[in-house]
Amino acid sequence: MMRPLVLTMAISLTTLTVLGQTVTEDRKKNIDRESREISDQIVRPEKMRSLRKFVETHFANKVDKDTILETTADGKPAITFSYNDGDRTTDSILIDNGNSLELHSDTYPTAWKLADTGQDSEISEGSLSIEIPTSEDDGFSNLAAVAVPTCAGIASPGNPYPCCTVKSDTKLGNCTFYAWHAAKTFWGYSMPTWGVNGASNATHWYDKSVKSGLPTSKTPVLYSIAVSSTNSASGHVAWPMEIANEMLLVYEQGCGLTKLGVIQTWRAAAVFNKGYILSPTSAPKPTISLATVGPLLKSKATQAIQFWVTNVNSGKRAVVTFPDGGRATLKDGQLSSVRNGSLTAYMTLSTRGTYKIQVFNENGKFSGLASFYVN
Image 1: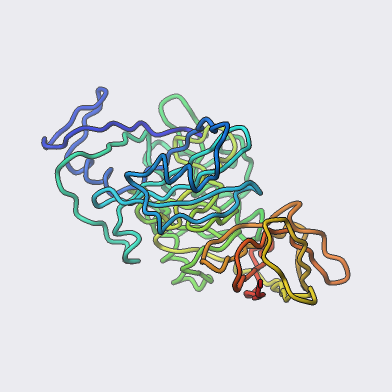
Image 2 (image 1 turned 90 degrees about the horizontal axis):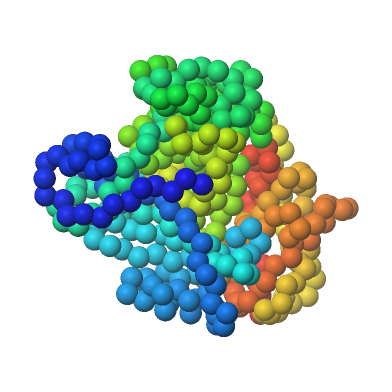
């Protein structure tokens, strides 16, 4: 995963020169209005008491303790937390890999979280973190993009969205190319284009989909197209594959950034300020209801909980909402095969209260919420 170049400096000039690149005041404002995602590996303390204690100790001067929530990521223990720094908010997820800690953070204007208007907040002069991106994500890029069916090594026959070309690198990935490819692969549906000269840029995908009658959601949905109008000047689209509290693991490409395949990135849900485009294809929706008989008891051990299900596909995933509002995604070995209409979910029920579970199929169809109580 490519890490962004971040420089910290006092802003007071109308034009900046950074590493030979001239950054105008307008560009500086655009940079401050975008999100910035970074990832890092952290040495795991030999006698670490818990992820919560680690966060409370190492982010003591920043973290809002009320935002700390336990979850899982890729089946591993994880914790999410948030803090504000002026008019910007940082959402983070810390994953315990056993021999190391993996930190992913997404920083964005706080205004994105306060209102779903797509409007950018004004900035004030002071100490800012400035990222110099190598390119911007869009649909029909001005970066000498050419329409070919293979971008960053991913073949996508019939894909109308172009690869990106930057300098001597050709056929680089593009976020709209991969979003179209994912929808075709998982849904079996070809997303439309909406014209040239920026009309098909990622920033317009949600609004254009609404006007075209495609189903949408304002809350995160797995196997959907997540749309941001503010992540870059041309917006951004990505494919959510996992939810952990307010963080999303998305599959994506970046215009001029992805040289091979697809990038897996943890991003804050607030970054996708527009919403989520859902599968418009005709397919039965899955259903789920509790099958386990008898009381469910709070325990730190993994428990096997049975559910009655219908129309659940082999590539299913499930999102569990905890009593405190936190969320985690179950997949692979955490979900059994369906037998005689029964599905077993393996999870830790460490808190008393009402839990909710929802199943998502690879084809973009998902169930309603099934509730169960833990004593």
